[in-house]
Amino acid sequence: MRLLVVEDNHRLAALMAKLLAENLFAVDVVETVDEAWAALKTVDYDVVLLDLSLPDGDGTEILRSLRRTGHATRILVATARADVVGRVEALNDGADDYLVKPFSLDELLARIRALLRRPSTTAQAVLSAGRLTLDVTSLPLCVDGEVTPLPRRELGVLMLLLANQGRLVPKQKIENATYSFDSEVTPNAIEASVSRLRRRLANLDAAVTITSMRGLGYILTVPGA
Image (cartoon, rainbow, N blue to C red):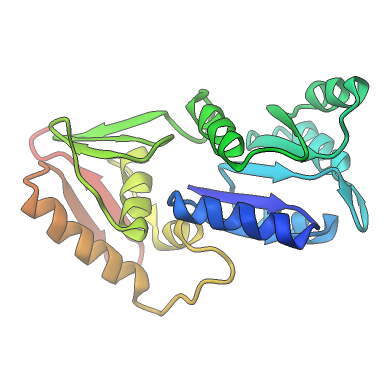
């Protein structure tokens, strides 16, 4: 899962990014309207954490524009604007949730997970194939009901393949979903992650197969299904 934090308070942005990374999310942080638009035009984010008071404009315009164009990304407004009129306006403009600063980081994480449980065009709450199930809100991977830890990169790859079971997932899409802008991505990083994931799933007898389409991407299938 990849999240965008739009926040010009450097300390708060760093705290949010640290929390989200520790909970296995890929995170990009920007602090202006222009930077937010540049990121949104490049990546399909699962959640956007949006401050409204930004140095070069009002985050409300980002919210309104995304909704006018039919963008389904979940948006959690996190702002110091505490008045009821402002909250109602943001929710009517298309925000999925509204959090007033200062807030607890634990509450922020809980609200993000609650948003991810809601149906959307971009994700299901629980993904499954073969003997695997993956809850995308709390990220435990289970094999026949038993929780099995995976490194964050491999978990991100598996999530995307499960969400597109039986369909080709391009390498670029995997990279976009699992690496933030400031991550160093080597030319064979995706191949290495998929190779490690294949070995782990084989050792777990997960009853799924990941097939490489040379130069294109990968497909996850269930043999015999």
